[in-house]
Image (cartoon, rainbow, N blue to C red; front, side, top):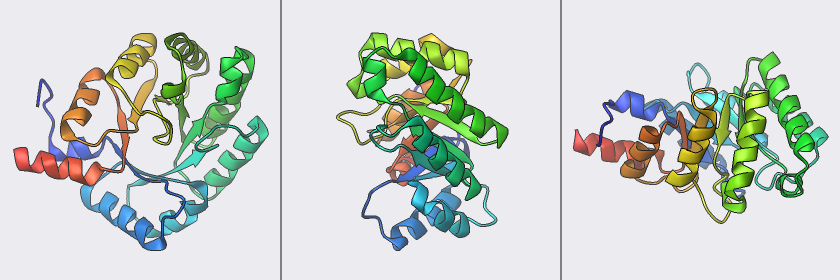
Length: 228
């Protein structure tokens, strides 16, 4: 397991256990929440329409409820994302993961990107809700990733996040290393998309991520249990 000294409980707490499929059933969310409570995952990552449902399923549990905002394309207005964020928070969401407007980033409209990040982060901060900014790195150049990190250092969301898991690629070691180099310990990093094995998860943790978004959280923890 490399240089990491970690126990099962500590490993599980890295995970945002994820169910973002459009066709997910009520039973899928029951399963998601039951697994999160059983294993001690940090959060369930869901679409906003499921926040009330999952909050009820997780009643009395320390597991957080996280809403994906502007998901997965990021192509709604700042006002739309802000309203979506406020609604999710009013429905008792603990965490917000929103997707940036990639078009505006590509057009070098950095003031738009900073305004979007600032207003969403501020609403979260005022409500004592954790904010995460999804870059969707598979569509970005290294320079664009670095620019996003610079903007994040100005705004200070709680996390910057590699991917939605719905793009053409997910989290890579190279991208996590770039993000860590840019923000250091100022902002936490979440790796999401394609983290499906224990080895990958442990390498991500070694690189400095504080959260991992995955649909394979149970399989990863079960793999860990077999090794100890």
